[in-house]
Image (cartoon, rainbow, N blue to C red; front, top):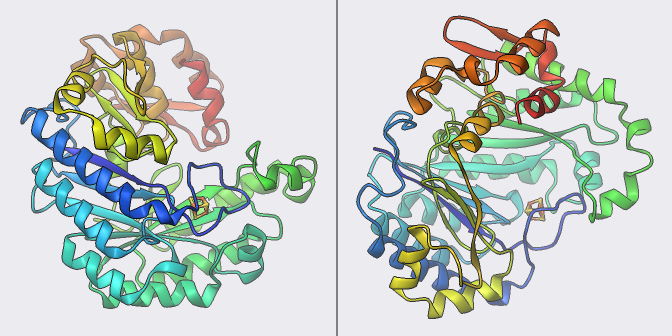
Length: 400
Ligand code: SF4
């Protein structure tokens, strides 16, 4: 049975003005941080049972996954990253055919680091390109330009990676659908196998909020944003990428197994400050605090960690239980997780997991949204229609 591990790498060279993810610029803490993360991985591995973090019902094809996300995992010295991956693989007994991803930014993707990642066992790169239009990149405050991004893809391929994903942000002021299509075609020509497209979201507390909170709807009217979403998706599908989730499309054989594990309600371990995990019926997290994390991981005992992971989740500084899910909570999570996927809710799987028909639990919400033309049902699945994609959040909320 498959096991999934998320590792958070909270360091960034500087804060992008639209970003509200947890990240810090104090790279002087890298060495202590990665030592602490190695200790967390080793201690966790020493206290969990062979079956912990695996789930026979939601297992999606038997491959383990490890995902180094950020922040900017390609910013720290490659030695720290490779040592941590080594520790994670050993501690969690990760299979040799696992999908092992690292997020990389073009500005820190050196050839030396990329070869090191390949040698350490990473076999998938997720590149934070965001756009291949230099004006859009300037608006987003990114450190790279379009040439830097294309060069990074070449270097990644030369280092031996075939499984390459690139991120794009849509709905940026000044961006056009034609420009996005051009970027996507360039990605395809450069050998990118997986493309994630995210709509720009203006988050409170970011410089973009102050800059655009009053003007974003004039600069990018909601109708234009939706046209861009559908136009982007149609173009991806036209040139061979299959959209398997609202924001994710892949050439055949290159869907992200790690991301799919989230939408399949699989359990996963979390390593690192700001990382979130899911074990048994508990969603747990590490606080967004690098210093508290380093301190705790240097002093925590195996017994403390064991007690925490077995559900006795009090008394720790940086680790805490976010939510203890009841059976009803877990049932409500299924529409939240699965309606984002193109496959939709697998009705037989739901019955297998909870012993009850999906429509016996959610009859009203199902009927209401089918009547509005936002959901469609066949024998096996219930999923969003094309117009339902534009109201995905409202449909999902109807099930909560
Ligand atoms: S590099 Fe990524 S995580 Fe870091 S600040 Fe920019 S968007 Fe946020």
